[in-house]
Length: 302
Ligand SMILES: Cc1cc2nc3c(=O)[nH]c(=O)nc-3n(C[C@H](O)[C@H](O)[C@H](O)COP(=O)(O)OP(=O)(O)OC[C@H]3O[C@@H](n4cnc5c(N)ncnc54)[C@H](O)[C@@H]3O)c2cc1C
Image (cartoon, rainbow, N blue to C red; front, side, top):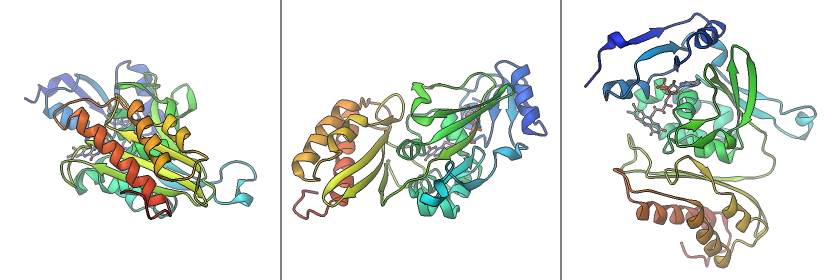
């Protein structure tokens, strides 16, 4: 049942400066970006009453730009990419630098909801909604993203890997907004793998979401990054599984060890979308598909 709207206030400041000022002056006020999570919560009767601050005129939070990644970087190769928090899934899907250099984000965006949700939903909202089943976070973890957080008292940067601290708990102070997502440069020929498993291909929340990126040196894993959604209270980076793989030949023994380690790193649950057992099986299958697809050994079991 939709609650009485009298209990809600939506204000639309004219600038980012005014929005941050409003959030600072009204403790408990919350940002409102595309509204695709907030309006679902309202419809379901779960949205806490109070003040909501629209970010729609915060032009500083728009845009996807290629950036030099620190002094001297340009001479080494390409820099990173910065994504404004108000960037929609449609803008992420249509971004040439993201498609070329961080393709898992474009894939995640194209598998999020339907076109209407993609036109309204923002990456900042996906991050701050803090769902363990959200679809951009595994890709952000694999790309070693950093978040730029802003409040009326200043700006700070935090590694995305440290941002989610527990179920719906974030390193985000009252009055702070996610302003930008910074993706650092990547040197070398990384191979990316992104797969969302849901009830169907569109309009489904993930049962398991897997993002992996691997850098091979011949048959040996030089470096690897793995992250998953829907298998723990937050999205997770599977660092111990990465450690099992790094420096090893990508053969059956290594893949089997990695599968065993991944099983110890995830903590899936039974819920309305799936069971813990199914999620654990699918996570192992996706890890294997990722690794076998990265190997030149044709004898590996798929
Ligand atoms: C039909 C439908 C299908 C969907 N399918 C998917 C899917 O497949 N995968 C998926 O991951 N999600 C899905 N979603 C969820 C939703 O679209 C995303 O989480 C979206 O990215 C939220 O962004 P928003 O701008 O709409 O956030 P809002 O609803 O405006 O806000 C969400 C939360 O984030 C906070 N917030 C928003 N922006 C900021 C900011 N810049 N800084 C700090 N806090 C902020 C708000 O206060 C609120 O708590 C779906 C939603 C719908 C309605």
